[in-house]
Length: 301
Image (cartoon, one colour):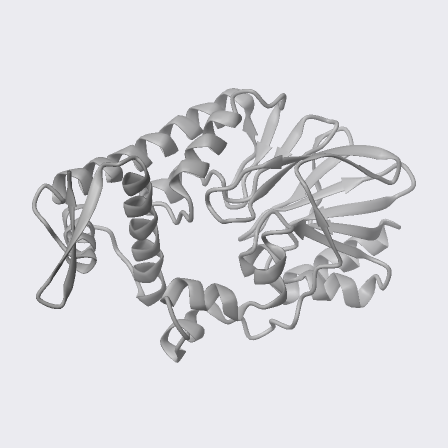
């Protein structure tokens, strides 16, 4: 697996989930988002060892298993490795059933598990939680940036080379065109995270899912497109609730009107985002609800 230098000591390895690598002067390394388990992390470990690099730390940007899942493989190889995440991500990583329960709104089922479960997945445990702010690793500073929104525990990792690893705060334009109804936990926090990008001092952005490293200008332009997508669906929700409607009918109309393709998992991701949007508009004082004929109907005030 080829290490691609971005700037200074900051590297990344391409994959379905891109993996960040920061190599210290003593050839120890920090991994950012090891990705899914299986052959890819085995190859990464093999190639790093060939270069005399020892992985001593992992930071997971958030609590989705396509980012943290391979952590146990690194831990098996590097026994003293410290696996880190935000405090809000830790419960979901330590207990992955919580993610499925959150998506389903109750106990999970085989329909979802078949899609979500990776055959190589084993237990991943977080050794240490980190808070937004400056932390010291191996006598060098790393900035942890609060990027809540996509998930409850999302963070970004900014190296002293001004390379910013942002997990799934942004996705590539290609993915955005396919999943423009983004999978979001907290709309207000997400919009705040997009605006924070404008004031963070970075030169390059590494996306969790994308084929290239972005310049600052490219990342900020992409952030604007993400904001427009959020606003598009908030406005559709406002329009659809001019007459009282239940959640399922709103979702069905949005999926059909926007020709959004989906499988069982993606349907529930879209539904989760819609619930988050209803919560956001409710907080803004724009929505109310009515109980009628065994249903919950949302409508604009």
